[in-house]
Amino acid sequence: MKIKRNDVVVAISGSQKGAGRTGKVLKVDLEKNTALVEGFKLIKRHMKRSQENPQGKVVERESPIQLSNLMLYCSQCKRGVKSVRRLEGDQIRRKCKRCGNVLDA
Ligand SMILES: [Zn+2]
Image (cartoon, rainbow, N blue to C red; front, side, top):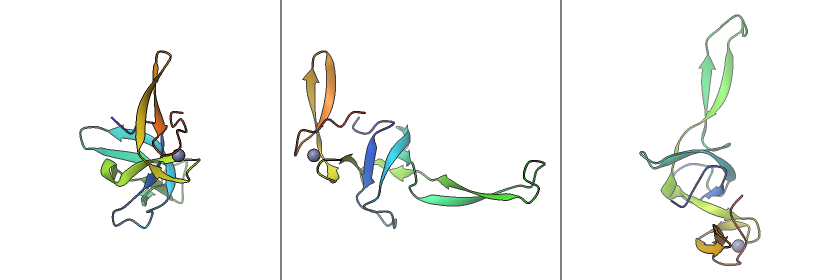
């Protein structure tokens, strides 16, 4: 598994306007091979009127994006990168293949 919750990822392709945008992974759905990423592919949902929101309300929600359209983002390289796994002490860390920056939060 390459992408996990709380990873910072970048959208690399696909039809969405957000290609090149970065965001934090909120949730990964392994069965569907999709992830919810903060601020990605926002869709507007209309909330029903309620006591709290007598006017009704429009909220923006993230919609799932295919994992294959995401890459881990390296803050050093400022781009999506491939990661390599390195054992450090007793922890496996993912590092940027280009610069060695640790990608784990
Ligand atoms: Zn890097």
